[in-house]
Image 1 (cartoon, rainbow, N blue to C red):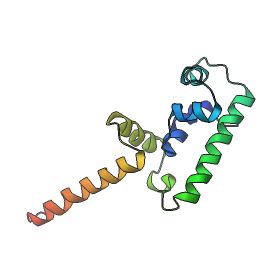
Image 2 (cartoon, rainbow, N blue to C red; image 1 turned 135 degrees about the vertical axis):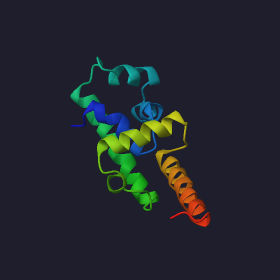
Image 3 (cartoon, rainbow, N blue to C red; image 1 turned 180 degrees about the vertical axis):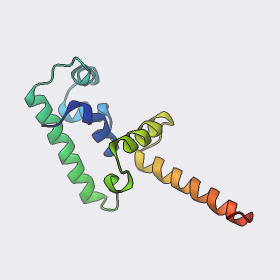
Length: 120
């Protein structure tokens, strides 16, 4: 069974949020927020429904976006992933993928600009 503390990371990996999850489960945003809060009442059935929705979305994305980044290759630890995910939400990035792409390209431009200036 899925651990409720992993749900935000799993949603971010899929580029989804609690609103999306609420729609999938046909529940209100407020109900999802309450259930997933620290003192939420999480039944086995509820957690199974969440896991099923996340698994189906991951499969759908693999089918429609086979080029999507394998996050476990890009980030070495869950802490690294969480840091990037939090930062992407702070800047209200469209998705974690877009955030990472922009960050990598920005860093690449900086390196190339430094090289053009004669740096090492």
